[in-house]
Length: 122
Image (cartoon, rainbow, N blue to C red; front, top):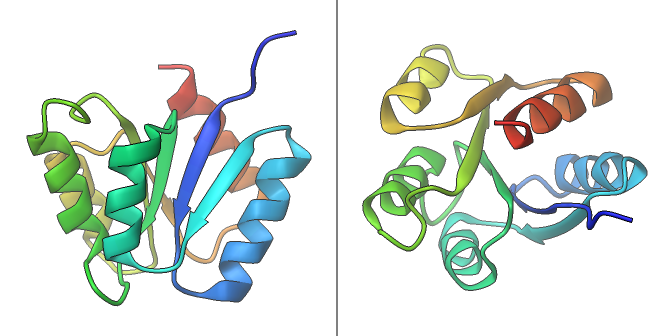
């Protein structure tokens, strides 16, 4: 049986984080969680997940700033990243910064899981 991908979710809203973790587990993914930007950035660099899902607006560090740092570091430059935000224009900025995908908040289970599977298939 193939190993299911590790997914790091960096999300400061605990209710959203808990829901996303439940949805990811329901599809067999192995999620881990950071509740703000700085620990999320560190965890991405240490654990080397198959995918990082970044909320954009978080305490400590913005999701786009984390994405840029990941892209600027040779060890994490190829890490797959989805940016999640309800802010207008962020998805275009995320694409320019090198995101592999984006999802709009709020989203439902299928939107999240479809985006995850699409990015992991790259």
